[in-house]
Image 1: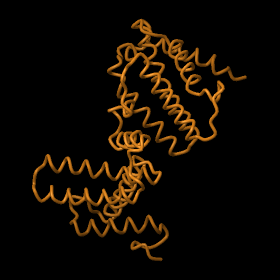
Image 2 (image 1 turned 135 degrees about the vertical axis):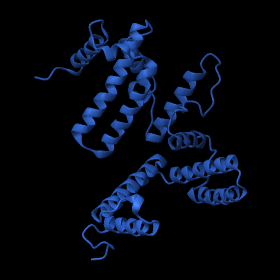
Image 3 (image 1 turned 90 degrees about the vertical axis):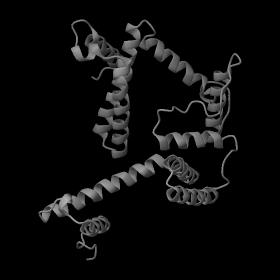
Image 4 (image 1 turned 30 degrees about the vertical axis):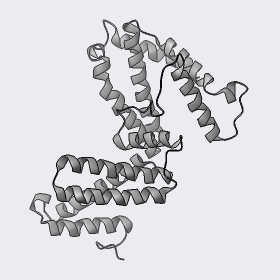
Length: 274
């Protein structure tokens, strides 16, 4: 019979403590909060990739690795005398109960939007308790990937009514920003070009958001598509005994178009036609 989650979690904490003990693992013992930061980010992205892949064992594996990073940081905090895993869990449970009064209290909500608005209101009240000031935009980490951060900032601003009426208005702004990028390119000012390209990307995120799309996911999909097609092109050229460095731009263009066509029609000829 499988042990309960609580028993297994206690076992995980014991494993972590043993790894950090005097007779534990040399690598685990020398880790610090600073040295662990990259692993936390890496494991989060690996979990995201597994979730997108949808394969059960991969999801379980990567979520476990991500959980281990949380346990690792809690152990470090315990050694520093700051808090324990019990403290962390107690605070988390209390927060979830407090921010869901429609589930654990007498409040009433009927839609997901109402529940989310209530969450944001309670979160704001918590942050401003005691007279502390808080911006509507607080809570969006600067360390987020730029597209994701842009979308989160836009979402928070939109909740105040500061938003485009629709995606069509946001798209008009994209066209305006393209014109400003054209001017910056012609002017040759690198700093100005950087600013205008940033404004263009930010405007494109608005369009994605207003159409209910995840801008980060859109770009990730395009990056994956590029990688796929580029590797198809490499394989085609390799079959002809050629490397990319030995291939003319014109030949690479033809191979690239063939790779695109092959994706659309895997059973067709090189041109994508039956």
